[in-house]
Length: 276
Picture 1 (cartoon, helix red, strand yellow):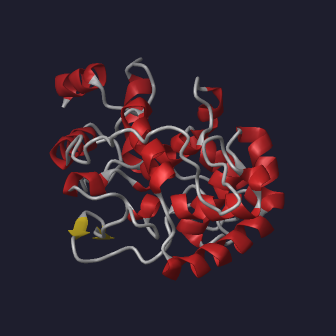
Picture 2 (cartoon, helix red, strand yellow; picture 1 turned 120 degrees about the horizontal axis):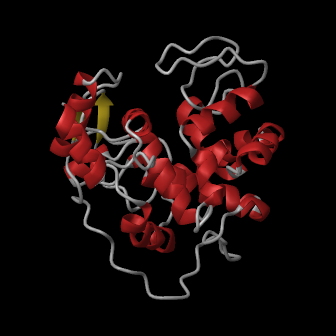
């Protein structure tokens, strides 16, 4: 299921202190950074309208569509065409317009107004949610986030709802990408991800203990998805709490005048149980 940021903050901060990019992934990270830097003229106006930092836009764009400028960040479809996923959005007049709409769709524009704002740890949280918390149900870290570093031990979804213990994500994750971008362009680094001269993340204080990986479970997420689907919301039942499930929960919360945060807490759970 989805976890509030404060529950996982210490884990992400620990990851940032400990992560080292594996040598065999460095070339991919460098090539990705070249693509991200070339797209800065697009990311800057999007940042001005949403508050989502260029480095976050860049690593998500690389992971989602290899920084293809013809595609929108939210759903990966061409921005000049109507998307094929619910909620249908587009067509748009420009990629900037499409990406602004996409980031607002998933409420990433609200992070800048939160008490913590955009830090490196909060970016990792939003990036993991973007892809889904499903790997945690299998006791694994998400390759989408920590892939390409020594923190990743393999395992990934090879299809919707189909987990493979023996398959590994062979692309660098968002943490390795942000480290590489920040090394090349320190002005793009988020608080908590300032690199020293050797390109490593300094550890000024002892790293906290990580939050157990099994926090939350797939059965809970599956129940949420099945219940909301019965209530008429469009989403896949795959046990992976990601953007699609968050959108459905937020739509439910809005409809029933609950606090809209996309987290299925006690009040939202009770409301779903009363209707499903």
